[in-house]
Each structure stands twice: as C-alpha cells, then as structure tokens.
Length: 61
Image (cartoon, rainbow, N blue to C red; front, side, top):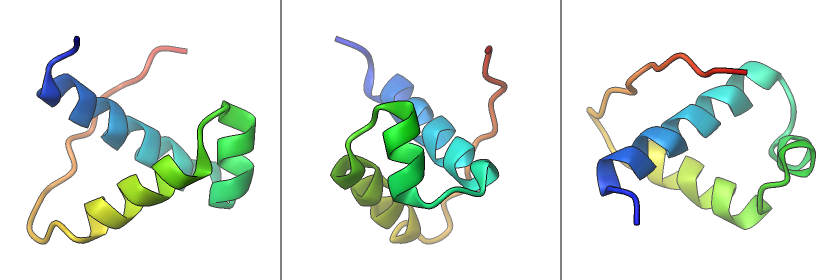
C-alpha cells in the first residue's frame, strides 16, 4: 500500500488539475474516470484545512 504522504500528493495533484481544467467537478470526473463523490470530498477536506499550503508538483503526461 502506498504511503499516506504519497496519497495526499496525488489528491492535491488531482485537485490542481481540476482547477486548471476550467470544467465543472462533474465534467472533470467523467472525463478522468474518477468518482464524483470522492473528488467532492477531497475538495471539501482541502477547504477545511486552514493554513495548509498546497504543494505544487509537476505531472508527467
């Protein structure tokens, strides 16, 4: 199983991609094959973490 820190980085990367896409959450999830409820929860959790900086990472395409 992957480490918790690795999973958190993946979540942050997905949320950055969503924001950059300009799509709605539903459109993005459909295009990326991700569950809408999971991505919505990640967004909510990220908003509820005051003072937490987002770590920017470059993604390979």
